[in-house]
Length: 65
Image (tube, rainbow, N blue to C red; front, side):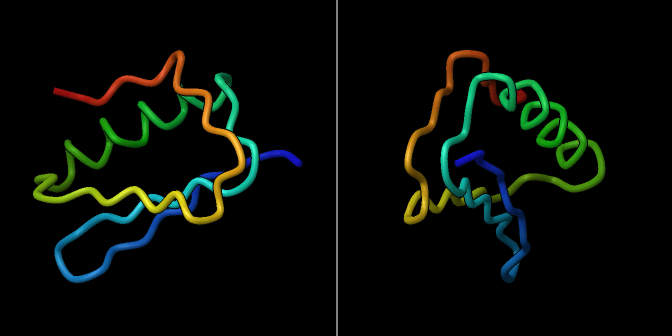
């Protein structure tokens, strides 16, 4: 199963939900998305919901500073 990463805002928190098999190739896309969020909104809280994640390869993932 190919993975995907869902996003929604709940109150003042950004919720990321990886679903299925999230591979290393999606890491740079996630990084760009988080950088974009940081530019348009102060990231006060990020929640990662792993309840539907089968595999999360975070080799190339980096969180913005």
